[in-house]
Amino acid sequence: MIFDPNSIDDIIAANASTTPIDGDAPPLLHIDDVSVTFGRPVLRNIRVHIPKGQTIAVIGESGCGKTVLLKTIVNLIEPTGGRVLFDGRNLAKLSERELTRQRLRFGFVFQGAALFDSLSVYDNVAFALRGHFRMDETQIRQVVRDRLLEVGLSTDIIRLKPAELSGGMRKRVGLARAVAGNPEVMLYDEPTTGLDPIMSDVVNELIIGTRRLHKVTSVVVTHDMKSAVKVADRIVMLYPIHRLSPGESQILFDGPPAEILSSPDPRVTQFVRGEARDRLMELSQGDRSLNEY
Amino acid sequence: MESTARPTSISAIGDAVEHALIGIGSIVQFTGSMFLWLLSQRPCHKTVIPTFFQVGVRSVPVVAITGMFIGMVLAVQAYDAFKLMKVESQLGSVINRSMVTELGPVLAATMMAGRIGGAMAAEIGTMKVTEQIDALRCLGTNPIHYLVVPRFMACVVLIPLLTVIADFMGIMAGALVSTTVLRIDSFYYWQHSSSMVGPWEIFTGLCKSLVFGAEIAVISCYRGFQSGAGAEGVGRSATQAFVQSFIAILATDFLLAIFFNNLYLWIWPGEELIDI
Image (cartoon, rainbow over all chains, first blue to last red; front, top):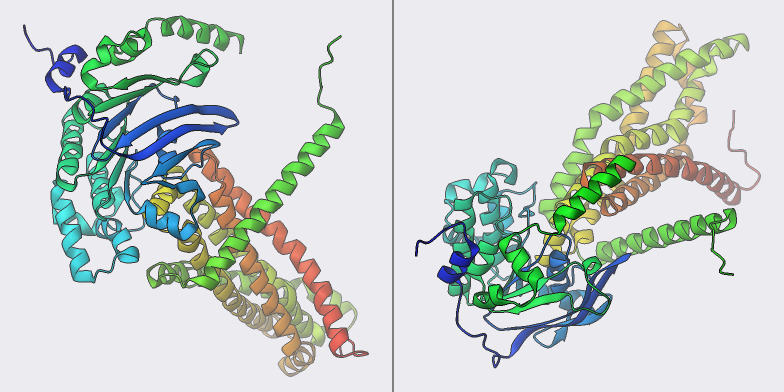
């Protein structure tokens, strides 16, 4: 049989972890019946427990609430129902000072890197170290250097501003900044979106490398199946609430990557294989609406 | 028969009032949070110095030019009326008093609302849209402490100083036009001016500019934090920052004028504010 790099079946067969999920490891993150509403419901009764050291990929089509879930984990968005427990603590109930301390145990890689425009690469990576870690400037310089080298960037760029970097470099600086404080949990929001295939794979390798090097628990939000299969031990698939029937779970799949194609739910295989199917009908309906507009 | 609720004018008024109250509550909470951070933790000098430079040093030319032209225009506009009444030599008193108590503070603050307020709202709005504010929180930094406190400090400290520059430029430019172009005797010009502008007028002018500075900082930063998505949202927040700051400046100017008049009469009962 010939390996087809564009076939998700072959990619899963080649990359997916077949190791069963360790259900005995104590969960570091408990997402218990979390709901979020912004005028309309975005997340409904999401229940996911993430053991220490696991890498979980949250997949799903645009608008299904993946990023909202990720931001709810660090309490950037407060859940309207349910709770998120991190290491036994409900982040939404903590004082500002304690919440800040707990947030430093997370590293967040934002979709657009979210580097501070007014600061240089060096100051971006050193940002959290200056305020919260008892380090002198020599130690900070050493950490910045190490983190940049870890993500494959030369220290020649430390004086550059984010606007002077390419998309891939920005993502890597964002990763270096996120791991600078030695977090226990890494959160990645669409880490490969907008990158060329080679740079996407570089970022995937960096996610795997970061996990191996820093022994972190990771949550990767993505709709890039190649990336999800490559980096994750476990995949959780969310579905947009407005497409669900009342009372139906928003999580369509929760299991190891190797099993995702054998899911009995056709919506899962449709997403994984990237098939339009019934959505083409919606496109023609949208076209009618446009004509009526 | 099932009745369907239609929006009435009363419900629309109710919605508008509710919306306004939520807005007021939100800005009061924002200001309270800013003051708590201001009093509890000193901001980092790495954020304070660039903000002071941006608000202060970069604004000197525009404020100086504004003050200069106000002084010159006042001289030209008021001259004919004063000449009719044959009191041209009193021109200096009107120019200088207007500059120090009203036009200097109000127009310098208006210029700053346009130059600094819009920029602050746009910068913070862009940071919000590009998730930089979320990144600050994730890196253990409170965005109000990091972004708002230095801007507030810069506006409160530097807008009064910029107003002094505007006042000085207006007074000197008004004097120059009056004495050289309009041929008013320099001795009488300054003599009448000194009788109309004293420490009280300078004090009230500076107090006003301090309040205007605080308003510009709070409104502009708040609008930035409330910015909607995309370029349109950021643009709208910058416009709102200027318009709302401008309205706040004018409304507060009116209220402060009444307050300071009453304060003057309370401190010195029976004395007139204008003593010619």
